[in-house]
Image (cartoon, one colour):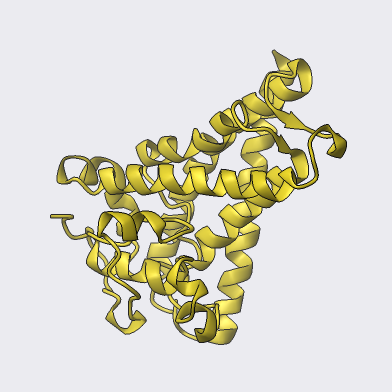
Length: 250
């Protein structure tokens, strides 16, 4: 039991520190790239950090339990020996995890925009108007729960090398932060080119934060295109500003 508790506490700390470092770095990048963009966002950012620390606890707890189960009992399909699976499986497993996570995120995210669930689960995230580099983990606890179970569940189903799992978590963190910064970090040749037609960047997710009923995906535009919810790229000039409750998702 002490080892389990320590593992859970360690994972909570790791998630929280990772959030502070990555969001903090991109907030500094934003301050250099677009001075003053967050100048009037002090109260909002403070609220985002508070919700994000709560989310870190919710994300870290199951991750800590799974990490303990893997190390102490071999419960999961995480492996450390690179030769345990063919080398081609390393990139394939990363892609499979991202595709599975993207599908889960699309459908749970879209469901949370139902008016019956929006106020209870998702309105906290949309109170960030416009989002900032600190918004990525600003979730109500109920929403955090929907995100916290994905990777811990996948490691019981899909084999993955521990380093490949690190790549998945890094992509998840990087995309979560950069898609909310309030400006586009990637060049136009990617965003408006062939890659941008299938990959989600800040310009695509910005449209969601303005229009609400579209662009629900996380990494890829596949589900939005298939389900008719892809409304293209957004304009940062159209971002709603000001304190107060997020508008209804109706």
